[in-house]
Image 1 (tube, rainbow, N blue to C red):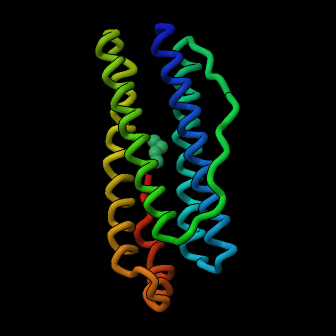
Image 2 (tube, rainbow, N blue to C red):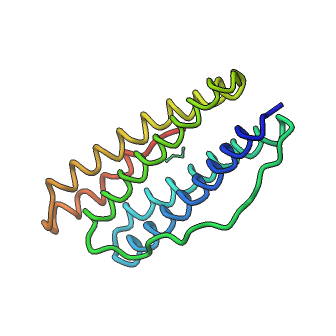
Image 3 (spheres, rainbow, N blue to C red):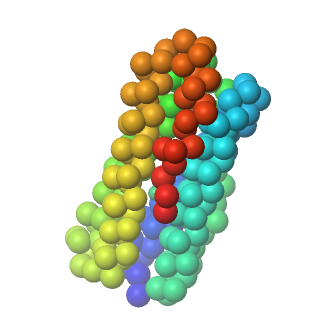
Length: 165
Ligand code: OFO
């Protein structure tokens, strides 16, 4: 059984995962209209993964005697000044999500909720991987800068950097 506090923090995390899915969907659309098909496919896939993160939390809350809440979401940015800016936002967002998960993990220990603590370890591991991928991409894109041929090759190769989970 979930305490009210843990249930509401898990519901907040559900909202954050849903917002992540929307943020990455908006990035996918922007990349697609800019003609970077590889980046678009990568972002569509990231968005799908965030939805999976959300669903996993929803099922856990409902199975543990809570009620997963589907809430309204903040609208994502739909346009960017550059791919550098977009990938910086991706990286910053993943760091934000990591902090949010860490806070949640901390609260489960305070509440002695070891079941939820154990469940959240999957997210802790996932965030290590997602942050690493986002950091790798950001490093590459910072090297490429405004170089069009570099961006072309990056668009072709980005699929290999996808997080698999
Ligand atoms: Fe990108 O992270 Fe969900 O958890």
